[in-house]
Image (tube, rainbow, N blue to C red; front, side, top):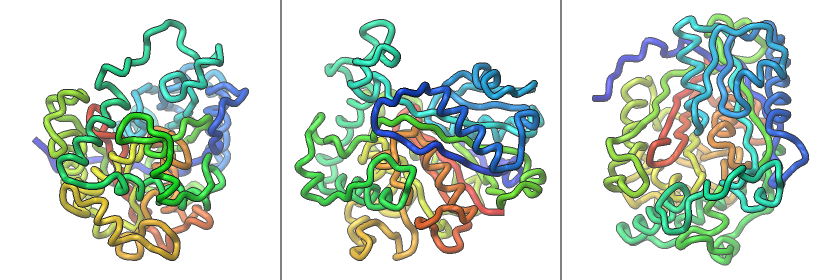
Length: 387
């Protein structure tokens, strides 16, 4: 049952967001150092100190470790939810609303590891401690699951591989205006179609870019956020969606998985939807995920996302502009800014709504929808509005 009950709507705000920027190579820094840098920056942006923080939410490094690094004297709440990032954000929003804490520091450090890049296997500080932790090619787990469902998508709807390519090109175009992005070189459809195949039908350019870097956020009550330097970004609703069979090889169909649950939940709990959104952030860890989000949120029907993108393609800027106005992943997303597991999508949404997005700024942006994660156990979403 999807409930419309949402007592925390507009009661909690993201006061600020910060990033270290992202590198598409194995750097000589630790994950913890990136997380600490982003957290220090976001606290300074808010005019806060470590002593103002009484809650921490993040995945890695562990919250107790980050508390020690930052010298936060004491906290009354912490959590370490699994990625994607909306999980960390939802936990912090809930904690602030319930009174478990008042000022939550929320962070995510992306890092190049053996699960997302083979080059990490050559680095003793990054490679796994024991063999056999990654699934073999005979499984339908993780990334292999998305290649299987991408193939199913092409077969079921009779669409060409080029439809995936539009997503990659859009995000690379947008990343060109983002100094934090890992990838800036423009892409053409020929570049996309000639890219190295990883597992049919997905190539290198269909998959997010492993990066080193971090994002951090300050989450607090709407009242307190109004006393801080930047316009508060109010959280309307958040959702983490699964169906009863949410494993990659057990998902019932393209029309029944976690994305549909997220969409119905957000629509029931929010005051606005796609017709009123000024900027949209569909997840793009794999291009097939983006096409599914476009369809499931209601921009078009099943199998129609590629045609929808072509109809809303702006030839002048070489990117998607829905109705000539709404950009999609203006920061470049996971495919070009870097694989941040959703923190980059939320950070860009916050900056857009606060008017801090620089060259990428959408005029008078007031509402944003972020649909992070994929199909299975990790479909997530949040609706945000400027106060």
